[in-house]
Length: 257
Image 1 (tube, rainbow, N blue to C red):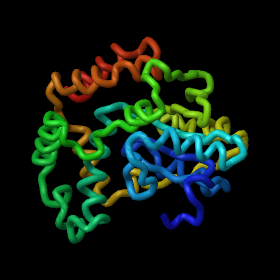
Image 2: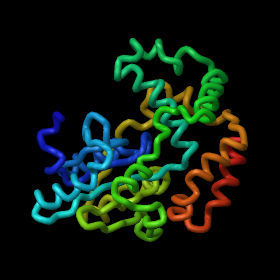
Image 3: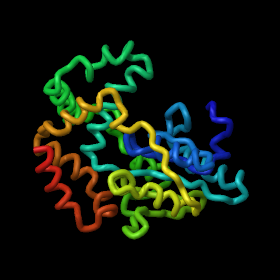
């Protein structure tokens, strides 16, 4: 891990799903003097922990840092919006970055029509084969022996906090951070210091931004898939958006249908 420090010497672990502003949060914290790493799952090349090892890692961190708890940040994003963004990140950038395609002209994002891309997205969504479709918060809860109902969210502070023996888990909302511009405020609350935002890996900076925009504006997703996406995240939506589940579902049905 070419970071100059180990997992026992970081200040923050940004452990969050694909396309939930993890790189922006990590860059912002680093540019403000904090040591951090980000991951979407424990088995990635940065963290390299096995299932069941995370809780013992947090205890080792606690002992190593004179009983200082590890601060973990995770972010929830509207499920279908996140899946669409993840689809483009995977097939537009990741396939080139990891050598699965030679260059952008070889990618399906470049070669396929909007209609072909939309058909593929819906097929992968239906078959639950989407790269990045995995929700990190499920793994976090399993590893920390939590249930979704154990989480919380403070609308005034724009984040939730679960205090455990060896770590603190901060739960954030993507729409609050990015669309409502609360990222600096929330990270300032978490760190206790004034934070200046540094963006990274944004859709507007991608080579496929125009294709992405047209894709989102015209896609029609079968109602049963919209319902399934929301029903599978109902517990966490009810916590982060109290009393808003049905209005958010109705909005999604209208937007994607």
